[in-house]
Amino acid sequence: MEEDTTTREKDKHGADWYRTLVEEVNDLATVVDSDGTITYVSPALTRVLGYDPDDLIGHEGYEFVHPEDRERNADALETVLSDPSESETVEVRFRHADGSWRWIEAAMRNRLDDDIIDGILLSSRDITERKEYEAEARELAEEYEALLNNVEDAIFLINVEKREKSVRFELERLSPSYERQTGITTKVHSVCLRGTASS
Image (tube, rainbow, N blue to C red; front, side, top):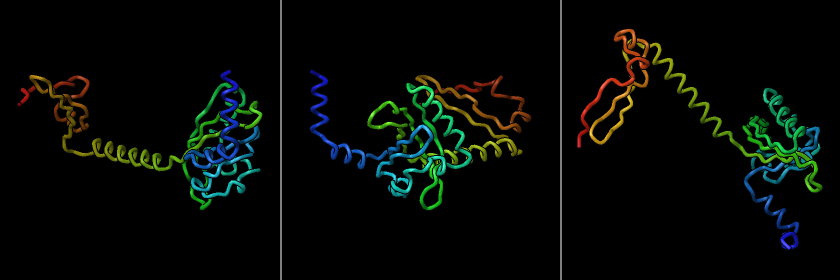
């Protein structure tokens, strides 16, 4: 009975409903065969990467992946091919139609046994902004680390935890010059002060 209901629901929606759904979703849907050749790309491709779907169909996906990321992409594909129960998520740079590189996060699932999909299904999204933010954060962290390690002034960072009747001060980071001048390290003197909390 449940199976009949599901079948009627599918028939009620029809091909146009599913086609519209695929066209409207934000994620990019791609199907490749076991050799990595693209057999289908959803219309979201134009919005995400600037191509018309026909520009990619029939080409190997590796052609558009950054050379440094191709091995990682191939390993993920091999994993889902060797074990259809497994899914893999990979982050690679994909060439945009304008020649720039966009970071794409793709979740791969083996659907070769599916009579309709008949391939490896990839659900992808553009994560370029996230990657750029992460790179900026790493750069700032490196600059901070260089500053902390090279200044002559004594620098220390303190965590302050306010409790009901007191305030707890804990040394989090010390510059090498501070350790040289005072002999205090975070390892031997993590809690240095206690004070009375003010109302």
